[in-house]
Image (cartoon, rainbow, N blue to C red; front, side, top):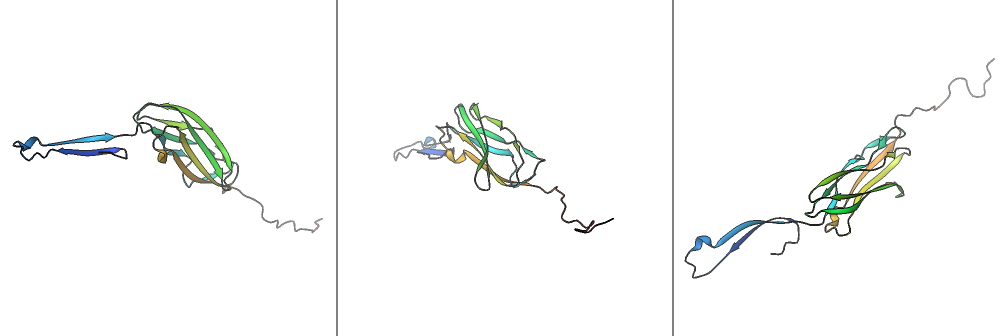
Length: 168
């Protein structure tokens, strides 16, 4: 028995002695829990919302991520980083925090605010930085959001006075 993934396994052990006269004690069944001991990662992003359109000059994003210690060992300190990239893949925001979590516990990580000043599409990612992490597949979460200006009014033409005309 050599499990390669964490999980709960039903194990059955059977003895098969041909000359056994009492067969009601030949089988043992049990459950075995195989757990990762060193595994942290972001579980949920609360802000920014995926696919949401934020209003330019009105909204502010407060990046917030739920961080989980999936493992059975206390971990820390380890880093948690939040980053925002524009549609040209330029890093426009980053912030990091350091946390320590006891086994199977979690924390809400809040980062510095991101003002919605420039219209466009943005890509948010948050990730944990634990060098001894045994499962790197759950270390990063991502979101896409837009900053729009839908609440704007502008002049498109002048009807009166007519251009070049003199009124006396």
